[in-house]
Image (tube, rainbow, N blue to C red; front, side, top):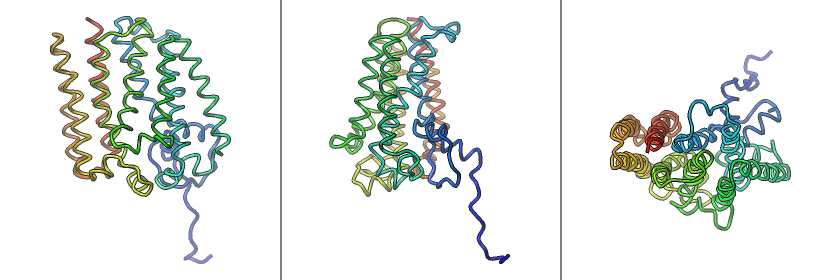
Length: 321
């Protein structure tokens, strides 16, 4: 055998396959035949379910009617199913469907541009998933169903032409933050309390504001494709460093506002705790701002843990009012 003969590409490791399936950025072309389950999960992007499920849980906690004993409730698991694989999954599939040309540049291994799922099958799957999502939301509460329908409409507004809000600088991140944080938080509260409270609305808005910053962090991974197709995200419009600074400020200001609101309500301990959780995020932001495209995934993977911890601290404070 000639010593210069090239070796076949190595099979991806289990970790690489898990990362690709979960929705973590991956530009390596697969050298293996993915199973139907792997392809479906990749289409649904499980990594995106976690913050939405957490928002629902925070809303449930904020209701004051949720405790450890409710973890076995059917309504709780319907909420997890709804906010995770169903509602968020539907929105992720819609995003992939409408962004297939952009993904062919930024993430060619996504199910549609890679050919793993045809447009016809994607349309059928999205339609079925949407109907099931709305039905499950109705089982929880009509208010929750209304929010789910709004979320699906928002997903169209975000990704579909001619509106395509992701092209319009701030609006794309705002509508995603509202859909992924405000709606599930209020849905969690309604699921257990039967109504929404002003305190939940204020805190959820504060964290939705902060989430516009985390959405901006997500935009760094697709700068190349966005520039080529004319999508004006913050990194495209302002440059990487300025956009990273703006994202960091949005993230911090939203959480500071939430802390100040708790302080105003007399929830001093929780207000201080929520503020303390901002400090490590600021430390991480220093490195992120220094090289946004290098540290975007790293930053979100670590910093998000402190942000969601602050959310729960605020939810626990509201529950006692």
